[in-house]
Amino acid sequence: MGSIVWVKIRSAARLSCLVCISLLTLTWADPTISFAEDETLTVFVAKKIITMDPTNPEATAVAVRGDRIVGVGSMDDLKPWLDAYPHEIDTRFAEKVLMPGLIDPHLHPMLGAIQLQLDWATPESWVLHDARVDGITTPEGFWDRITSLLEENPNTEDLYIVWGWSELYHGPLGRSDLDKIAPDRPVMMLQRSVHEGVFNTAALEMLGLTEEDVKNHPQADQVDWERAHFVEGGFFDIALPLLAPVLFAPEFIDPGYARNADYLRSRGVTTAGDMATGGINWDLELAALKRNIVDKNVPLRVVLIPDAFKMGPQYGGLDGAFEFVDEQLNGGTLPHPLVGGKRIKLFADGAMFSLLMVLGPPGYVGFGQNEWITPKDEFFKLAEKYWNEGYKIHVHTNGDGGVEFVLDVFHQLQFQKPRSKNSLTLEHYGYANEHLNRRVAEFGAAVSANPYYVTFLSDLYSGVGLGPDRARRITPLRGLVDRGVLVALHSDFGMAPADPLALAWSAITRTSLSGKQMTPPEGLTLNEGLRAITVDAAHVLGLEKDIGSIEAGKLADFAVLEEDPYAIPVDELKDIEVWGVVFEGKVHPGPNSN
Image 1 (spheres, rainbow, N blue to C red):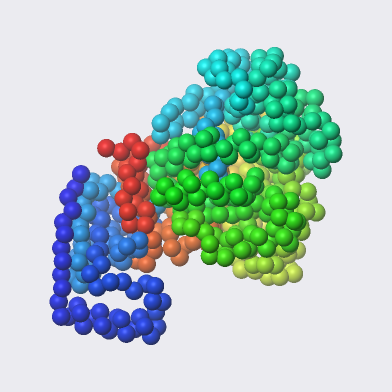
Image 2: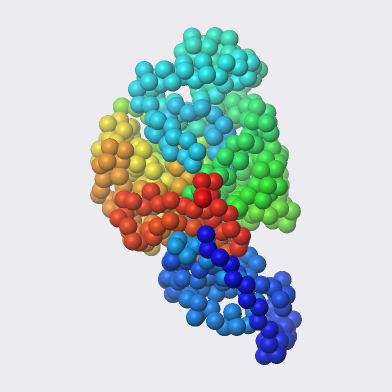
């Protein structure tokens, strides 16, 4: 640990300078940025500071006043500030590397909290900050895991949920399979994508869900009642609302939020986009965020991007939901560090991990089906409303058929009401091609991609779903960047680790689980990968004025790394240890830091 040196400097010259500044502030500046004469600066000294600012790319010291950066460079560069103001020099990072606080622009804090409270049976292995979970890739291994988990959790009254089932690895699953191993205990299997669920009879009875309820619902065609298998709208609109009282009970979800906060801090994340706020229940979700992020002073900025489609039924349809969303996001009532603003989430086609995305010709090979999460006519109405109201629109879309449809819709809206570049962001961008890369660039959309689709799925989908040629084109980012498209990387945790450095590694190397590099297309460069988890991710969220790089005027958010990403082989990028974070000028060690 380094030491902190206090230095106080006062002079007539400084007082005279302050008088001049004060007069200018009163005349020209926003008075909220003025500061007290004796407010102390903190200077963080590091082995290296990677600023992600191309005009000043490297530094060894950064001066912070309150929650903002005032200067970046060497100690000599900071001398004008240090001569003028009292300051402390913090050397605890003298042997470490600082980067801008890492940004995951698309995850779901609520979903992460829920998943971290469940037992896992995923095909992939996971390394978290506090646990390791081995992957299961056979039906025999899956059922062995489920049987063991049921024995280890003997409570037979509460609903027991396991996350991770994948039919392509674990085989078909239905109500009768779960009834055999748990005839009286309510059990649910949450599919790997979290876009599907399978229930046993006891679970359906516990939830009070009947066949008649399903038959009378608009999303009935996305439910196989005999198998008790709910997909996409059938899961989100029919089953999930009934699960809300269970999942949002504070005694269940709050420990998951605490664990999720530790996990994100251990990976250097200081800003996260909550990409579908209110999709289950706005009041329950906001209450959970306030209890677990706001009240506990968690060093994590959460940007709220509501789910437009799911908000409609909660608040009286399209217009009623818009009025509610607009007031919640822009009415000035959100507590720090929750962030509002004119951002909205739409859903087009289905999940990549379920092979439910909409593919264009030649379609699926062997397994998969085209599914829309939002009916196409409803999608257009939502898109038109929020586009015309000036909202930044984020659209979940995975298949090339889904992307084509989304671009068609917004091309029509752009013709009706032109908007500036990057008003539309395509989220995930699972399977696409050069034709779509070109269309995205010509439209002026941004892309926030999940690069781990390549890592987790390209081997599997080479044999089923897509075939080798299309599987190599999963998440084809090179063709976007070469055409000037703004690209960010996200985890959508747990679709990928909420580990931005690992996401960058995946986008750079395009390495599958078997170790095969899925090229062509080529991956990003190291610098492009790091931009995609810092300054470009900030731009996708519309927050580039305040975060994403280490430069004067921006918020003092830093990720504290043990190694320099530019000084190691790129394959080691995913293994860099994160000491902790600085969030708005305050130091927060990671859960495993010494």
